[in-house]
Amino acid sequence: MDFEVKWSPEATEDLESIAEYIARDSEFYARAVATGVLSISRSIHEFPFMGRVVPEIGDEHIRERFVYSFRLVYRIEPECILVVAVIHGKRLPENISERFEDRT
Image (tube, rainbow, N blue to C red):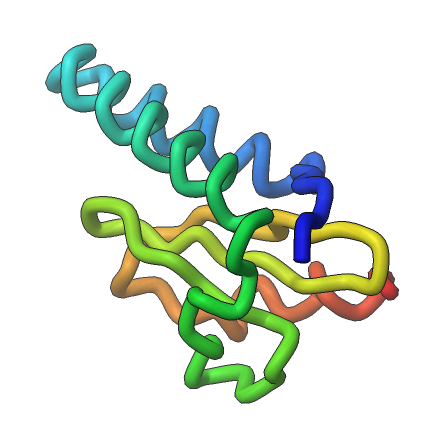
């Protein structure tokens, strides 16, 4: 299974906002987090089902991988993997559930 990984505009904005926020205190850590998230996103195409099912959503096709204290949430679609959110581990994914509604 080798899917193309795509990023939703919202997920891209999430990562940019996270990096900007962290950079206020540490540019080094901001780069480390961004690099870690991007690295994981590049590797999920090989084994997309390796990530755990997001427990709050319970959909087999919506999974997550953890990077530092952040959750990289993605949806396995027929033709690709769509990264839909990068959120803090303490944030509930129900706040991002509308991101899944318009996607197939």
